[in-house]
Image (cartoon, rainbow, N blue to C red):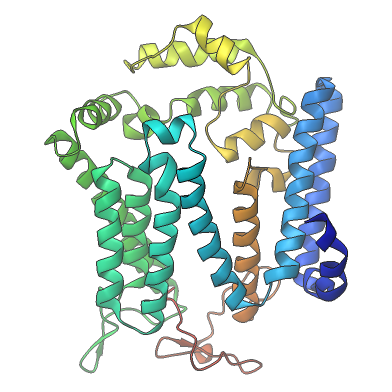
Length: 377
């Protein structure tokens, strides 16, 4: 890969230097500077300081190279998603981790298979074969549900609600959905998404309670559902601990790879008070975690590590392994979508009536190709 750095930069540097992407690089430099200030203030150990800064630097590099290779190139984006998904499946098969051995679907094959299903659904969506799209998304949702992998079930149902024309635009001459680009349309879409989320939660709870997902899933869902904070806190008790860490140092944070054994004890006490099953005693937890403040969330991790002095760190934090690459890809894809829809600085959506026609977005300056299928949003 190092051998390709120079030729790739020579051939495609203009893509990475696009005016709308330059603000990203400025924010990332600000993010790095903010993390350095926090580590200086907290006197973070050198090895943790280097690890924290390296995570941000590699994220910047990933973003630049993704931009040079794929910005504005839809075919390469499709190839990237397919390759990433297939690579994930092969990696799980050839190089299984401790998690993927115990939970081969959730921590192994699910990532790649879900991506391939979404990619194939996008292909049929572009051809307006919505029944096939619905079949694919419901089918993979059923597979995830059977393995008690709840997050993809929620995401797939929300995707169905926001993309499949469940509610028709028109019934005869009468409009059913509000016009595209209107605030009422946005309200309807939000309502559909929330309804899909409630349906997903109810579906998981019902299936687990009935024992269709296995005894382990039944016990897990029952315990997590009946704790004080409900399913959210029951499934992610770390959020309570990370919230306390944020309140203790909201501005500058606790430094890169922040360590404080007090918060491990807090997590142990929270789980005990909430009636959650604990596999380890507090001493074993401290030994395994080495005192790293538990977060289980890239958002809260960024806040705990770097504080809120840098807004970019709150919205986009460093990720381990290949996660940084995928997040870089999603950021570039989002900027390309905004660019294609001619959304100007400030991210204002065009609400003028003459910019929308019967579900098609039209700009006087730049019309989209006739073969591009537009999302309902």
